[in-house]
Image (cartoon, rainbow, N blue to C red; front, side, top):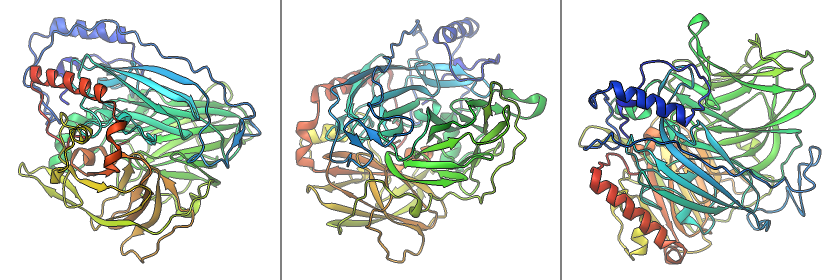
Length: 607
Ligand code: C2O
């Protein structure tokens, strides 16, 4: 992921919001190019790939992106005081069985670019979707089909790409999951790949690049699927992204991560903006949110960090939590929530304070037990009553530092499910070692994942391959409708957010070692990302109801890149007819041509 130092501008941009005009950037690049005579190699990035041949002749032209305006209105009957209703459905409808037939297809166009941006006032190279960080939100109604055309314009950094729709079940559409080396080849610069999937769930999530560390250079955005809710609210404020951020790119920092350990990150952003530094030295702008006294607001909080576990709170206000990942839960009220990487919580905040004109801090607090940040107390936004935000003088709720999940007793799914006894079970240890180049590699199921961009699992399935390499971390689950239990255990004191593709899994047991043998099968928390405690265990269960190659990995960016992953090959015999082979092959062919031309090296796990 080497970024060209060429893009690194010496002069600072004043814009704090990370929305960059493509045209402006083109001008800057052009300006810079006229003063650059060589392609310097001062970057110290030991990136996940390096490019042996550099071409700087790509001329950047104005990019026009078309983003369709969602036309659908939330289903009739879904009113501020009746959020449980959804046309002829409601919040108790079992969405794992029933999907509204809306007949609607939403279409979006996303373009990835190498740009320069200053989200906290400090200018650096970024990668962005449609010129902004976060990128545009994909909005649909429960039951809609969604088509997204993803164009890779990362000519300068010469990066392939793929976009993963985090948490979207991809029910029988595994080939749309957007994971390089698993479901597709990288999409080459200059190419477009079209994804199509159905919103069989509803709630909040995000899409992000699923190659190397690209997501954390800025390639991510929101997914918002309208549906019923377990509590009422007046206004939907959409996604609130909590991102950690540094003045060096994550590709530059990866070298430190691989050799020394997780680097200290400079700061964090709320929806792509924040202030950096204090007093008169401060740069950038705070995220602000205006509220009206007496109204209630839904916030869809996403942890989009590379390596930060957050506590999120709003001073003097409680949060009513209504869903965990894509699973609606019985509402609970709390002063703050714990949110691990990849997780989402939808919360309702009621503007119930008395004084008009007051402002309150919204705080994203990196938990020091597992996150290294140089500005732990300065990642804040402002919620303000009335027109103008002023500097709040409010204080944080008291909390204890820690990186665990919300207790299971809080995360009770609204649509209850019981889990059957295991038909298949396994136990896997999480360990760490160094490879022959003395770089950290994480091990799961006795292997560190090493898969290859040009040979994704689905291509191997299509070619009727029956043997998979040891380092592909592949576990076969051949039988339909079996219950799979996987115990993940670690004796290392590092927490990990464990994410599974293609399923909402059940959290059957979770805690610090030793495990007491208890298994909660009676409507346990259900979600797509859960915390494995340091020196702890996480027992997950799911049903083999979705044929495909599904990745399971730690959502800490460094760890994914360092091989902390395995894949389930679920119902292998049924996968072949589900693959759009022409699309898969065309995309691989253009990648292979690009690779052959520019000689791209892959130096990471491949995912
Ligand atoms: Cu959010 Cu495998 O990803």
